Length: 97
Image (tube, rainbow, N blue to C red; front, side, top):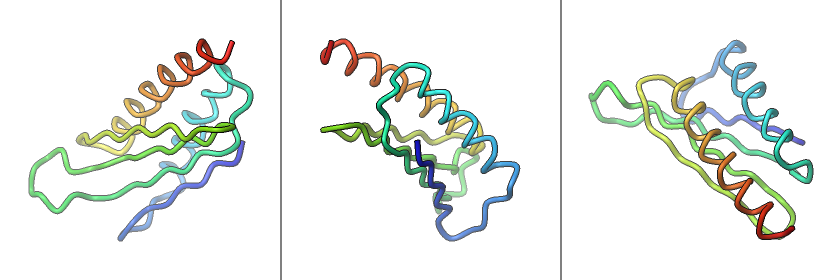
């Protein structure tokens, strides 16, 4: 699976990118036909504490699955978005089977 991480209006450090890559690559355990995953990290302009947005787009044959979460940290947001995608992948796999 090809994983691309896009940080919008800031530069993500290697530690964060490695964390995201590790989390997203675990999705292949549930569905081995994943083509690619695009991760978009952006900061919300609000002054609230929960201003980190992580949006994941998972490309599978014939469909694109999307999950978007907003939390206090990019790690937490990515974790929740990955979990949401895992559920979507399982549902899709049941429909296809």
